Each structure stands twice: as C-alpha cells, then as structure tokens.
Length: 385
Image 1 (cartoon, rainbow, N blue to C red):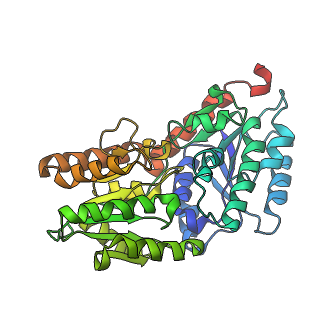
Image 2: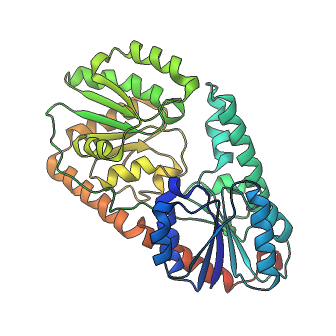
C-alpha cells in the first residue's frame, strides 16, 4: 500500500505527525506532503519506516502538491491520496469523477464547516471578520473536496449529516477517533484544595459557550462559596470587551481566573487539581481539550455535540449536557461535584482505558490502514453509479 497525505505546520500538529509515523509503519510507503520538516521532528521522521517527507515550502503549496501528485498517479505509484484541510481540492476535482482511476481519494474533515454555519453562525454574536472569512473559504473547500472523495472522514457520530448536506451519500462517510499522545498527558496526584476547582481550557469566547459558563458559575458558587474557576486560553480580540463586561457582571470576582494560554506543565497541574472540567462549546470537530482532561484523570462535563460524542460514543465516562441549556448544565455540574469518590474514580479509569484503546496515535493509524485496504479493494465511487 502506497499513500500520500498532506499536512502543513507540523509543529502545531505533533500528535497527528506521530500518528502518521505509526501509519507509515503499516504501509509500504507514506509520502507526507508538507511545507517544512521542523528540526524537533527530524529524528522521529527518520526513525519511522516507510515515511517519506516531501517539503514543498509554503509559497504556492497547493499548486506544487498537485503537480507532485499528478506525476505520481500518472505512473501508478500511489494507491491512496489523502487530503486534510482542503489543500488538495484542485487535485480531487481534477481526478475524482474518473471511474477508471487506479487510486482512491480520502478526505478528513477535522471540522465540518457546514455544521458550524448551521448551528453557530445563526446565534448572531460577533465572530470577527477574519474568522468568518476563514470559515467561508473552508466551507468552499469542503464543497469541492467531499463530493469527489471515495471516503470522507469525520471525527464524531452525528457529523455525517453535515457532509450529506454537501451532496455526499451516507455510505461514503465514516467517523474516526482523533489522536492524542498519552505520554504527554497522564493522570496525576495533584493536591485537591478542598474548595471545588472548575476548569475550562480552549479559546475563551462565546463559540465555546463561555457566556453560559459565566451564568452558571455564580449559581455553583452560591452552593460552594470557596469555588474557583479557571478559564485557560487565549481570548479572541473581538471578544475582549464582551468578556470583560460579562466577567464583571458575573460577580465571581477573585474566584474567576483568566490566565491566558499556559505552558503544558502549568496546564497539567490544573488538570490534576481540578474537580471538574467543563466544556460547553457550541460546535467542535473533536475537542483536544476534552481528550487532554480525560487523559489526565479529570472528570468532565461537556456539550452533547458530535465532536464530544466522538470521544465517548457510549456515554460511559463523560457527562453530557445540551449546548446552551443552562438548567441542564447546572444540574450536570452539580452532579459531577457531588459524585462519590469511588464512582468518580471508576469514571476516570473508564475514560483513560477508552483513550488508550481508541485514541492513541497507533490506534488511529491502525484504523486508517484498514480503511485504505478496504477502499483499495473496492472500485472508485464513480464506477459504482
């Protein structure tokens, strides 16, 4: 099996890079098309059997990648071409509808942009012009790539409907767990303060349900007067004024901590000390923050959305609450804070076992290798119409 996949900015996607290293070990060749190979990852790349890194630079990457792929498929040198982030849209459009092509096309949607427009954009709060423009461009790419792919991968059950809205048949969509390096996020024995510590990590803005959280936290504080809340992450520029006003109106005072983005060591300490992790986001592909919290043994209350269901599809260890439903969130957080120690320990152990089975780079790589084999054994989608 010979495959090619694109992934830029490898430093920002180190876990995904390690998943690709594991995937390469299961294939004859995996060509990784990227802008550059960071020095910090060179040793891992060299040690990965079957991995071939093709650094094409950032300038005109899409055109260079399409030309490189055209040269390879012309000679039958590839069995699978796998796109991420829509960078290979032109290549997919040029080749996807050919019923005689000898290679298969795979696309991973790390976020379903159609779902964002359907479920978040109508809320009406300021999204910022640059962010909105980015979403428009990404939706345009999705609409070009997904209908041409033999298989589109999403990161949670329920995202399939977002892809079907682009005209893709259900049988050409699968969901795949998202990877996390469990050697970097591990359970700890951080000291509990006695008073509850509630933790959120991620971008601090209303897309993530921070407005709901600032409404619910004072109600929890009334029951647990010593409660401390840490909202860790960058604040988008166009939400700073709103956040300052909402934080003041919450009345949380010194109990509300907004430290910005923290280094991993400080973040681990908070995961270990937190009594509950809260993630009321309106929309996600697969939230890394939730996977990190579970890996660190932190009980979590999360939005009942496809991205979070992709982490715990059976509801075995996460507590789910409907996005935007303040009474439901108050009840779920109260239950989490009042859970008996034995039950909480069992929940943490279940979550960690699930991540080890399904979300390690090696586990995700095995799922991809199996998909490639299944697709290669079947005809391309145009030949089945």
